[in-house]
Image (cartoon, rainbow, N blue to C red; front, side, top):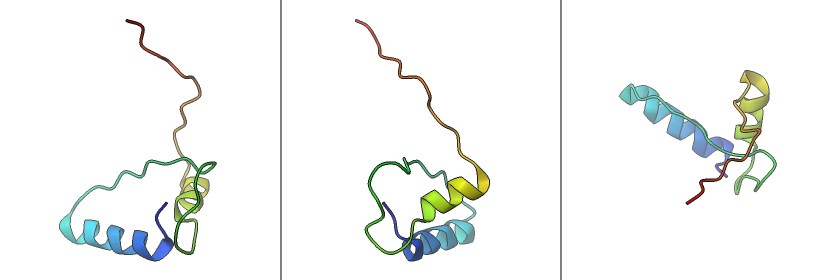
Length: 59
């Protein structure tokens, strides 16, 4: 749900600090609060892992 400008700032800070950023989300769910759909764009451009099967624990 992060906007494009906010994501840019987060990624810049991560790069400055030498950190790795892992984005987790679902492009079919809630849209970004601010302008842009950065997560959707990145997933389309670079690919993304998907969970295709739901597994539940049994007690």
